[in-house]
Length: 224
Image (cartoon, rainbow, N blue to C red):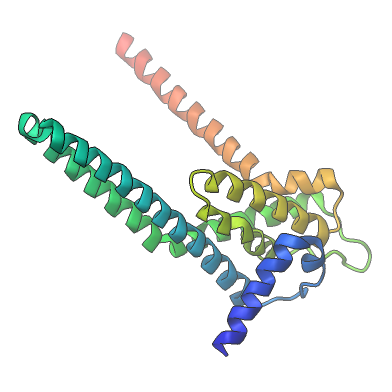
């Protein structure tokens, strides 16, 4: 059973990397949440964990090189208090990084739910089903797109540039998923895919305006 699950997972990754259009076209219309969510959470956690290990390896190498140089130069004796502070900061940074790996499934799940809801709203605005009700625009379909669109999260394992390639790959696969499942034109699929970014930008602008207005009111009150 475990071997079957691993083989199925590897096959899903392979299809999403090589022919995502074909993969999305064969997805069921009324899926269970378990499969897509499990796939996304496992994939993102694997990529994040390997990326963290790379950072740990390179970080330790830099630390040991610096440690050896400072030991030979007598830096410890001259700046012992400073070095202790730096060592404590290093340990705190390491613990925070390890903590991000531990809580990654929870933060990823939160992001998936929010992104799926926003994609669903975008699809409802820009996609018009025909007389037969096709394509079906609902939350489960948006969830599938977001979850399977996270397949490139494995690229987080690439040292240094993993985050860039992961984000770019996820965007491309998600765009293909939107275009395929919702049978959308490229322009509309692009707008729907970018809809979460549009919403985030809108909220940032609103928040910035509120802060500016509050500061203006505060300055006005201080002037009296």
